[in-house]
Length: 200
Ligand SMILES: [Zn+2]
Image: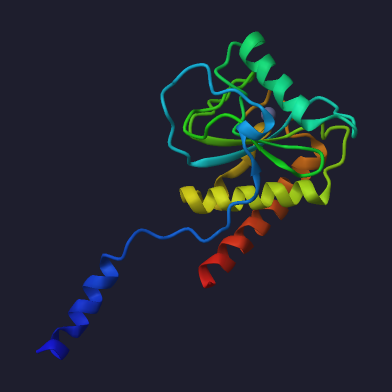
């Protein structure tokens, strides 16, 4: 009897297996507490993440700039001058490729341009990539962070894009970063990490 039921048991077990577990490792992210950031000033309507959108800061940042000071200034500017609840992005990447936690992911970001960032996980690479060159460590950070987010929130790699893909008002994320989106490098590398994690 048991043997006759076995195929059914296996079928049921497969049909009801728990939701996919996440295998892509979380990259090291410097928390708000570690860089001295404040909590958002307000609660706003929460978002469901379905896209990953890449930005640059748009301001030239010299190599010797302290990234912690940059993050603190960006948060003060965002709250005091722009009257946003927090930094407009969810993550920032510094000139060496270190990743910083910014606005909590549950809240939609903010923008100075016309697109609606609701549903987007926003990654900002500090610096101006119209003028500066993206370094391999920064590209690694974009790829590792995007792969972790894509896995965690089930975001198709086709939904990884940049600010200028949604807005005609900006050159963001700058020519030297945009080229890696345009030629498919970033998406291809994210897909490789996702594929590898599923074989493990
Ligand atoms: Zn942007």
